[in-house]
Image (cartoon, rainbow, N blue to C red; front, side, top):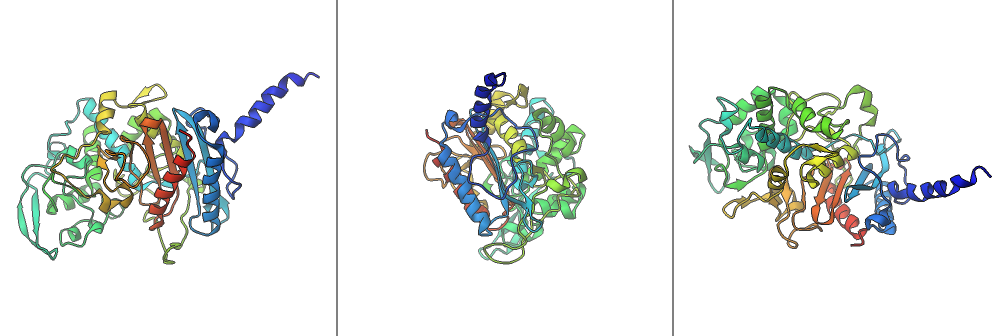
Amino acid sequence: MALRPLLPALLAALLAGPALAQGAPNQGAPDQGAPDPLPAIAPAQAGFSPEGLERIGAVLDRDIAAGKLPGAVLAIAKDGKLVLLKAYGYRDKAAGAPMTPDAIFSIASMTKPMTAVATLALAERGDLVIDEPVSTYLPGRFTESKVATVDSSGAMTGTVPAARPITTRDLLTHTSGLVYGGRGATAVHKLYPAGSVAAAGELDADQFLDKLSAAPLLNQPGAVWDYGFGLDVAGLVVAAVSHHGLDEALGETLFQPLGMVDTGFSVPPAKADRYARALPDDPTTGRPQSLGIDALKPARFPCGGGCAVSTAGDYLRFAEMLRNGGTYGGRRILSPAMARYMLSNQLGPNVRNLIGHADPTRADYGFGLGLAVRTTPGIVRLLGSVGDFSWPGATGTNWWVDPARGLSVVFMAHTPGPLRWHYRYLINTLVYQALDH
């Protein structure tokens, strides 16, 4: 009889427990590991249909069984409460290792918004001004930039002086003219490294800046949104101004205050068994595939454009900080004014917007400082609301925040091939179909 008073509490715990584990049964391990990033709430109390969340799990389980992806982790928060943190499939399918919610992923360009926040935090401290020339903070670099002239065949016919210097704002908005070499076939593209990870694997920071400073710009500063090395250079501006490496600067600015204990620029040996692996072959083409990065060892410099690793729970903390106007758990990272400015479209009518060339799922979005921002309820390819913001990673990772609905979503999967775009559309649709209002 002494146990009878405990029965209501036990029953409540059993009913509440599945709030973090909705979805059909799958090969993943039980949800355990790192502490939850937010207090939990039952899906129905947050306006989610439990059946709708189960549908997400059923679809992912089906695709995992079909060999389309090894596994994934999905985190959903609503109004600051954790609705779901769920692992599906395998962390390492070849080894038969189940996915866990605390699995670590190479997040590629999801690094960029974090670098942007570190840059803006320095601006708020008075250590830099984002509209001043980059050469102010990187002396001897980008002082007399030239812009290439290119004919209709893509051949470079000469150069002209840049109309104005590259600014830190240009770096944060991909309007600097410093393009990724792997994203075009012109003679100018061939003068640049293929991408952030490739550059950090081949060059140290000084060599990287020397190479970019010597190359002609593809476009005049401020004229064209074209994907490139802006956030990598911004990361080196952060390092120069803060007198720390970017990894240390982000540690002080973001990782430590937000409790992002598994986020950094490499996976330490003690956590190596938590690193998720991609399928060895692309499920679409059958050809060998790679993430392009060995996250178990540091790159030659911590590239702010694509070299970080993180977990779904850690990145949800970052997303929630931005949704909350620059604060999380009582810790202020940015002022509300700066957070709002970062999340506002910065591309004026005279800027040619090529975002869709970089990621078709973000075509027709605007762009803030370091991430895409929705400016219209229609036209764009994803469900959401005006003001939602995001920027995904080429390894298959993705996230977005819909402030109008109080929604934050992080999807971690290593699908570096064309299927990454499929899952950006798919997860977006599946999350919103589960939301009852």
